[in-house]
Length: 486
Image (cartoon, rainbow, N blue to C red; front, side, top):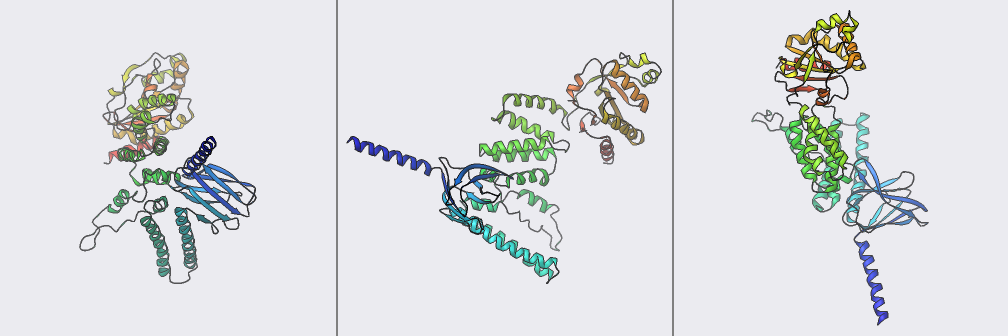
């Protein structure tokens, strides 16, 4: 009886072990004419390739990728020596066999026990046939052989055949990832715009809005499996940076919609949030910091469980500093000391007067009355400032002054040495018709305006709302010219 119990126990262990692996993945691989080498199984994450498992191929060319837990579904690859590799679909069924040959990895590829990979392989072979046909037709066009119109029609039919095949697979196998993946490669088919009885187009930007509204028809942003393909990031960034207008008020609700969809999966949410946050953080388009601040406040600070506390604390500080300086906000007021032009002129003759810091009257930014106010933060020994300040002054003298523009020129240097450098610069370029100011007693204004480098230029309207920031002198002129012609 005791022996029978032991036998039952051993049988139970074997059953449990077998059952455990049946819930994971097991991919038997045979590569003819390949032996005693390592082969890698990995997945795509956008344009990058990451390994998941390795196996040592024996002298027969045989090896097994095996794991207790299923792999996340997506597009995977089998990486062989000499940088040869082929793609496979990792769907819900992860128990199958692959056989190929070094003479032609794809052409000799065979699958057993994987419907998805057989569909994918058949599609690739069909695409190879279409590609050969397209190459032949393109060669005839380039060599002026045959009727060009007819050849172009045939080329279009090749693409139609490709689309038709993908749609057939997608419709026939709606529950398989291979259909979703192939469908995601299809572009939006934009119809002709509506017209009146005479055939005149009446839709205006109808085709653009159709394309924009249907951009993700074939691509499911909430499907985490699409993240493990080379397609996700390009699709997302192209939409957010090229399809929709580059205006923060337009982008923010779109970003909200995309992030909401990504919440279907924790890995997808993390990826989308980090990608959008970084994209708008490094954008060269003015005003995009508003989008990053929105994402930081609404999602990143409260919801990025992967970030350490020090990063979140720094991000909170960054948000607090940046929010008051966003485009459209009223520029924070600040108290400065305005030094009259006569003092600079007299200081050119008197060294003690030049270094004397206790001169001028208190002013605040909001006291300045003008249709446009330019805030210029600069310092006399800054290399870029030595170019930008004279450029802005020439622009002011030759064109900006007529628009009721006042320049609040703020020297960020301090102390007697700073005062001397400032005085010499003002006198050298005779910048006497600006409001030349500084604050030798407090650096609070630098913290308020987040002045980490110079020069920094802000353009304000008559109500001291920020129109533009961190712009060049030339852009100051362009923006004011543009606004003044409206």
